[in-house]
Image 1 (tube, rainbow, N blue to C red):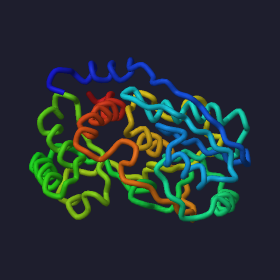
Image 2 (cartoon, helix red, strand yellow):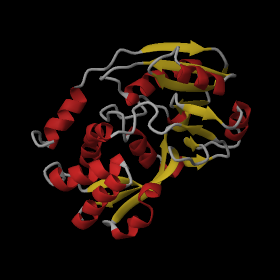
Image 3 (cartoon, rainbow, N blue to C red):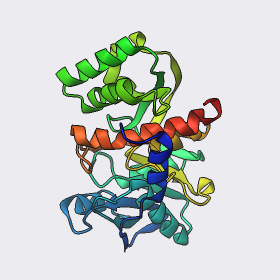
Image 4 (cartoon, rainbow, N blue to C red):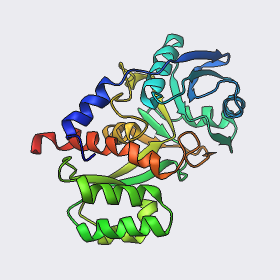
Length: 276
């Protein structure tokens, strides 16, 4: 981040070549098609997620390696899924665990016509996020320290990078997960926006699928935040439960968040480019 400008970073993000992707399908009810990006279609995670959504058509998008891009994998899966003219497309991580039956999901979907449908909240889906201004340097220092003490890598890494490079990279706001910062929220910078983020599990009404659903410039982070932000007026939470692992696919170490800070740079550029 010390060597490059925000323009350099965004250009690099846009020009990254795609990873190799292979698509596999499993038979089932085509009214609801489930798209699942996975590193290994024969692995335990893919097998478990296949079992969870048994009865529905399942599309696995297999891709791995350093060029893996969640947004590209999901978009490829959605494009493939649309061939079956589904009413609903479920986007799910492969590190999910069953709570409710798939029939419950179908029943719940029969009573809504919203564009984006979310499951009952958990730590990694259907959770509240806020855009917080970063002009409170004391808070950013506290956030970094608290992140270090409580072993919350996103808080530690984003606090550090925002203090050191935020101004240079045009960072006006950062995305904070409300449950993660809890009572500290009121001591932070001004909250300019809050909404519910779909996260690792969301369901799209086919009427909203027009071309690419996720912005593919994002690299394994914030593509869900940006979509949820845009669709907040056409959203409903249904009474369906599913659980998942923390950072199951990408890990939860510091390095992941050093890498994913590029998404903060890009999101800020999208949101505030007219104000720079």
